[in-house]
Length: 412
Image 1 (tube, rainbow, N blue to C red):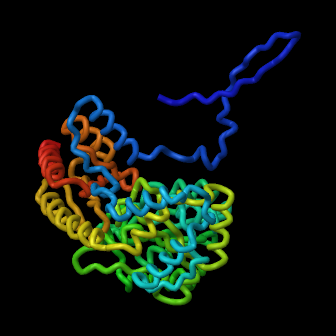
Image 2: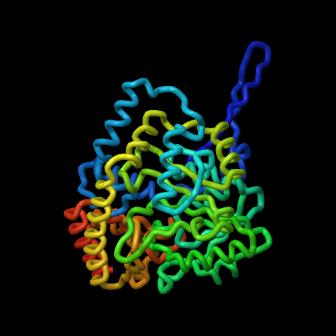
């Protein structure tokens, strides 16, 4: 059911007032009017409604770790709060946190960013949006490999840019190639968005693949937004490579995005960051000055502990998710009418459902209503022949959910 937006016009005449209600859709900006609801949130909300009615739902749609934030991180934030960390920080973040991020990027990623090139944001999502705001002008084109994370196109549109989708192929591991990148470019191309490890496919780009893509970007002077939020959740022989580390030319073209949500189970803390060439970093900071100001002060102390404290949680989380990943992939490969490319990172499987004859929305609606299993339709990510399954849930939920999915596929 749609929402009717109205405005009230008050007309006064000889002590009498009349009220006229008129549509106000004309007042909505064209950029905002182009937005679509998030299907990932829609599925999650529907599953929550069913649970609230007492129905048992097996959630395979989640996008956050099922673990709690490590105790040392929570205690650091609690202590900061008790010590009075309730005031503003610089809009770019605590100096000591930006210093810790600088050291982390050097240590883990081979990236040499000064603290002044780093901006701490209220989540990696705002970090992406502020970065796009800093560089995208009306009419600029942004190349987005598809499948894509659901919010990229909307963010580009809000900035006045035009998303240009490049369909990737399962046989290429759901990764854009340098040739596909080059073929998609026009004189209006300003930026390409790369995500590695990837949501929703779990793809991880190799250094050689990134170098080839980077050479095209260098030749055409195209900016790169590199979203690396899943960098620590990587499996088998895959290795995370930051594209900005591959050459000085790529460093000068790249905005690196990261955060604390996935690796440290801090989704609700809303903490992310960008690292960028100096002029872009200064612009991101100005945007944050005039929009969100600083990320929550005492939460930043938790992030500082996350970087400087015991890292065993990260390795344990990766090991646990790797075990679940292998279980889920083995189960999926044995099911009829579907197929999957084994993910090498993140905590998702992108499952081809073409053999069922259903589009992704119909598949997920029937799966939820008939079998009480929540998955995300691939149309949310730009591919209507697939669904996304998350394995960041318990083995009991995975087993029952996959049992029900298999029965659904057999009867489809």
